Amino acid sequence: MMAEKPETVDVFVNVLGYRDDQEKAWVALAVDMDLRGYGKTFSEALKELKELVVTQIDFALFKSQPEMIWKPAEPEYHRLFETARQERLRWIMASSPPRHEPTTEIRGLSFPPGFLASRRKGSFSQISG
Image (cartoon, rainbow, N blue to C red; front, side, top):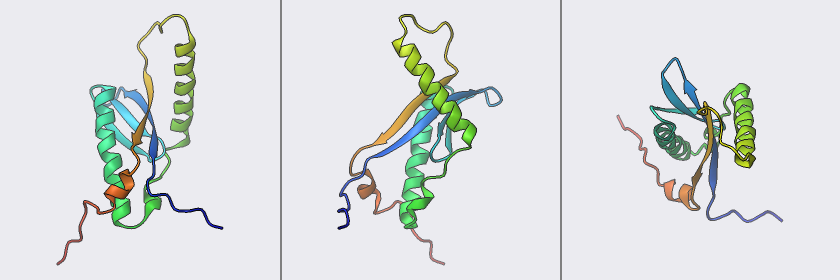
């Protein structure tokens, strides 16, 4: 017997934040989607990334090609994400704060249940001509 298709879907995207010295900016990288947002702060980069993720999801749904949503970043970024996650856990468990400002951050972008269903109408349209 096949499982029933869910009415709503939670979408969670792992995000690695790091400083890009060449760009002199923070980068927020969706490691499962290979999308990057940039900003003076990690929060600004994360905000830009969230808009890009929504646009990517909208476009994939518009094209009826959900496989377009997920395109993993290069393996080096997955390793950096895992290292940053482990460092963050060690810092949380430590009794003293880190001695230097972090050069990486990790977060998750979470979209509430019903997000995909509400996006199915799509914000893209065909151009006739």
